[in-house]
Image (cartoon, rainbow, N blue to C red; front, side):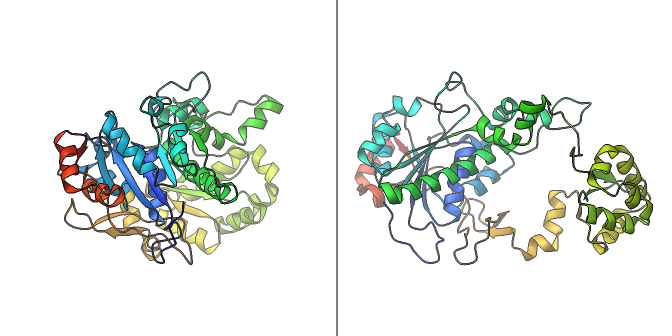
Length: 404
């Protein structure tokens, strides 16, 4: 059910996507489609998506929602009502992809499961994001990205060895799962070109996080090694660590390849180190000694001095940026990674992270920031379902739908 490629809208301009997901994983998956031109209709409950309560708020506007809901048409429908379920069913019949991240069984209870929707639209691809998958003994459990990280083993590896496991100040597990879910949807859409049939993409938060445990799975199976937290170092890759400069700022240096390590030693004025630890296996066995020598050199210099010397020697290294550093950095600007986009709610443009990856012929594009709850309800119901104003007004009065 493609609808004709529209030049300038991105390479996915021929797809229609219905996003029923909430919070982060589902909306991020939908955002990826929208960034590359797909027509994405996001359905929120009348009370609004919980992501609107996350992150920073300006006035009454969620800045998080301004980014993750961008490029989408937003409608508010009470899917707990029979009329609301009928609206969603009719919208899904016109879509290529349906994204949802309710707890397994919820959509079936509402008559909106895959069997129900595929009966109306055999080509529909349903992306199902959940904490623990659609099957198995844990499938009914509630779950968020960080819960998936915990169960996957990934959280156990995060942080310093002498402290409890920590987390990133972002919804890492949700973003990883949203990315896998979007990839799975594209695989299913490609398969549909041969079969004409849609299918279910079952993306579980814990499994997507677990996939990042790749090097540690065979190591446990064959050698019984239980990976542990190692702070900023990466075992088996030396030097690959964080070092503190004389001004208290930090730089990460990665020079595990033999040739790069020699260049690092030359920059440090320590050719003897290159001779002592000529091979990677030597450096791995004496990681503490190697790190100590590098820290001694770094600790006598400012961040600017260290970075300049390493750039001159062609050694991979980078300071630890804050978001303020990102905004000030010329490379981020030159690459267009900070996009200023119009926002109806904020009245002026808002800066968000731009589209990745960059495509040379059909790049993605941000047309507008996320809208308010129900901002596009009337327009979508009129254009997609041919509902008259009187019918929409009746739905609004009965609170089946909400407009901004």
